[in-house]
Length: 192
Image (tube, rainbow, N blue to C red; front, top):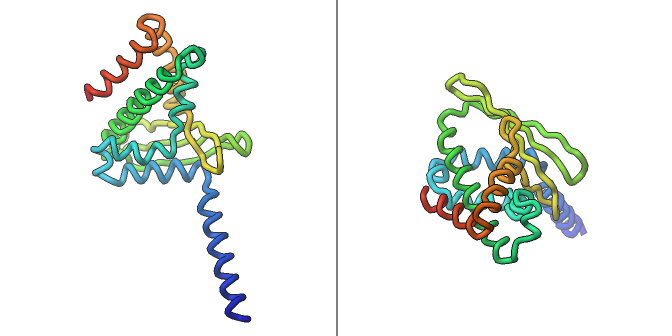
């Protein structure tokens, strides 16, 4: 009987540990992801490897939908998919390059977060540079879906990534159409 009880107690302990691992905070998601990339020289030089890490943290489809706004609803399914893939690759390339440049200059990063409700949070990070220059504030706007926190906007020094790209891409769509925009982004991605 003691063996059965001990076995059940051990099984319950593993279940609680598994539940705790699944219920991590938005702040922890950002901290772990940033540290994982910054502390690995291989990742800093390999956008494909970074893609594998950040695709589980960023919701590129939601970001794409927000960036395109009304143009998302007007776009055909194939255009939505093409844009989402191109935009994802652009963001990952930009993120990888920024991390590679910053890697040797980061002295420390302070994290804090605010929760709007059970499903919305913003993770605030303040990046201190080792060269003594001004710190940089980066906020990750997140939502929780199916128990996982996902980023859908990044705000650097008060400037929203979604809003900035919405303005730029809106002009491009008016000038060259959705296919032209996708081509422009893909050309940028190939060039780097």
